[in-house]
Image (cartoon, rainbow, N blue to C red; front, side):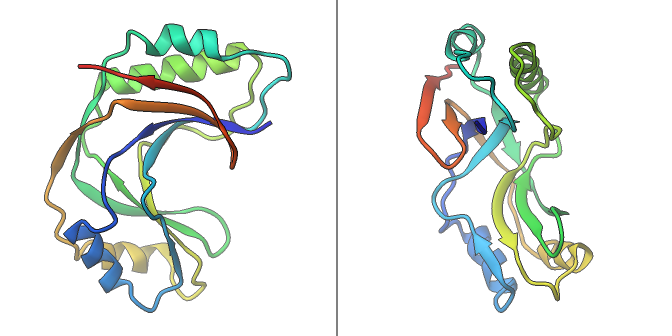
Length: 174
């Protein structure tokens, strides 16, 4: 079973910088993320059957402090053949949050879960499907957007089956 642990990022599709981004990329084949933004802390490509991960996640997350992240960058990366990801990120990732992500990933691996991808702190805004657009062109366009830095406390964590139901939820506090 594929599953993942995410921390929700409360932004809006209607933010003016997000509208500016979409306007600049009008005419490019992009599947925009709408109303559901998060940072994937760990994507589990395989989860052993009959292993209950919730107790360990409770131990890791019940006393965890909500990270405060200042988002100040829009960027893109290649994600396979003719597919790029447009994302929101930070130039100064909180050390405590990165440590929590590593603790969670280590825990999952200790339980026999397979994690093939490295952690990349990003919030997916859109997936470019357009074969005419390469990642360098995309970055040039994205760089024109005026993104004012903004700071958010991230409090809501969910463990979910990939494209399925929620298995666990936690609220982090400051």
